[in-house]
Image (cartoon, rainbow, N blue to C red; front, side, top):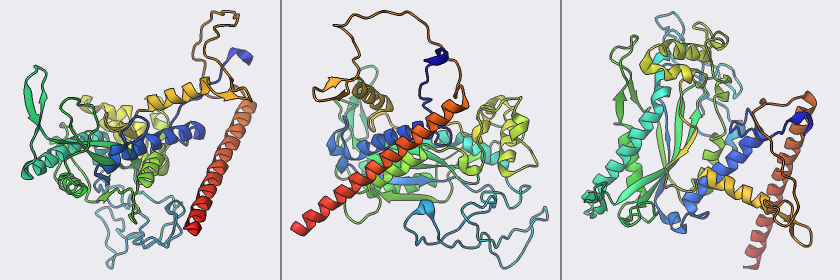
Length: 447
């Protein structure tokens, strides 16, 4: 290549950073989630009969913020919602907070209103609890997942289901619950800068002879039991963080009051289907802090003054709080993840036994490209091994040069080509969907 530089895809999952790589990641995430619901790609088809629910876990309130309230949507596309919102914080008494700020807001905020997520009174808002909660959200999820499995084990004992005996590390048999929970989870930032989780949870059975096998659970345990266990656990699981000079007793970490649980079905009129859940989680897997208005790389001592201000905007106060609290060694991760407002977890995770991995999908794509054929004789476009050809062996070294494009012209050409490729894929998908719909209509008329 010119200038001795070879361009390669950046692999960034965030749509705001690289739409092309993010689209590849989104499609992979879609197949990872959906294969765990309907099978395929190495996952047995029997998982389609496993009970599954789609749950949303939210953060608690840290203070009043400007919000766009819509009690009942009448639009068909939530991403382009045109519904008339309710007044933000309408109250009969126009009281003020201890700092003299009004605690009411009669504005009907639009989707692009910059005030969305901002605190009504920054002085009353608990920024410290906010960033600590973001930082501890991953641990809270881990405890919640364990508590859900323990709650299902209690249900199994009440129903008289026998335990499964499996060998321990010393070869001795020990009893375990006959059910376990596998999940796929995506994190999403709200406009106020707090993380909440969208999780797909599936009940599996346990094969004592092959613990990694995906087998159906006992028929007595249903999706309603899983939904009940989630509701019970979300309201009860809490823990306390280590002490801090600003909070000697530590912060209490727990879920917010708004926990939504819906049963996933493969058929019928229920809108929560496998395709909807997979598309929903995959969409949020490519997002970050863009909705809060804050986008930056990792923050250092040299750049903290650019993004943090104790008297600035809502996100600037959050970044400042992360940096200030991160002086304590027990909370050092707050500084490392200050650019993510304290959240240090991955935006898309799954249980080991839920479905396939991203690595397998990338390997399949690589194998396909290396063996791709064209022309009437179906000869490979590119062979991985030139066995019968005379080749010249060139020994060289490859090393990281830089991120981005060497010239503005290269960037313009690449972005234009990527945009055309995305539009071509979208047009192809629309055409396939149109053909599928036309075939279904013909079958219905023939019937």
